[in-house]
Amino acid sequence: MKMLRKEDIKQEVFDLYDAYAHNKIQRRDFVQKLSVYAVGGITVASLMGFLMPNYETTFLVDKNNPDLDSEFITYNSPKGGGEIKALLSKPKSADGKLPGIVVVHENRGLNPYVEDTARRAALAGFITIAPDALSPLGGYPGNDDEGREMQRTRDRDEMLEDFIAAFEYLKTNENCNGKIGVVGFCFGGWISNMMAVKVPDLAAAVPFYGGQPTENIADINAPLMLQYAGLDERVNAGWPEYEKALKENNKKYSAFFYPDVNHGFHNTSTPRYDKEAAELAWSRTIDFFKENLM
Image 1 (cartoon, one colour):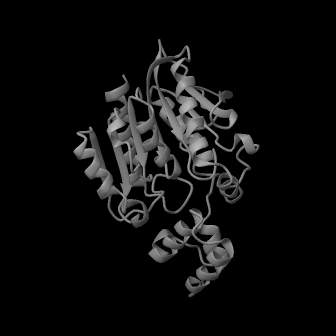
Image 2: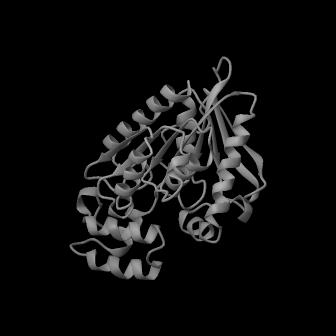
């Protein structure tokens, strides 16, 4: 079987995967359409294997990193799903109270990539909480396909309440200084935008390739840093109207478009990952949080 590289894959294949990952097409249709690109020694099975997440070798932070205190906790989300499981992380060397970050997963629950991202943010000098919106359904099931199907059954406004409740949990945590931001990816990008609308004392928001709010933009108080993938036509289509509303309401924001990268470019576990763009976007994110939370 031919060993695949990112350079071997046509953009149309990544677009197909994006449609499948965001519930625009069913798995059977995805596989059928993928077969068109199974040529020249490339099989459908090899394409499928290449596109699916790899959580074995893509961690950036060891989950047992000796410099971290990282553990699963539960908190109450009375307007959302009730008892929510979350990963709470902070640096062991912390002296005094830390600024907080809510880390919001994609449309498939708290998978290992998002856990890794939360630990990575904690190592930068923050206390982080990464909730699992699948908690009322038993939690992230261990694979993204099942997680995506499970998350489809939950009301997204109730899930928004779960992450707002995580903000409130951090705010009263004895190790947090009360200044809290949010970063989220895909679905989590939409949550980050919506928390900026819904949470008056949110101190900063960084949505990665997230859907945009269409009303109540005037209610946003937090400065925004918006991260977009240049090839992500689906999400980027909503940006002009959002930017217009931000300008009309004199909101503080910056927006970055990373050329020639796909939706999900920050996710280390899939071939959509782009190391250069992801590292630049992440360094900007951490600098933004340090500027606004510390």
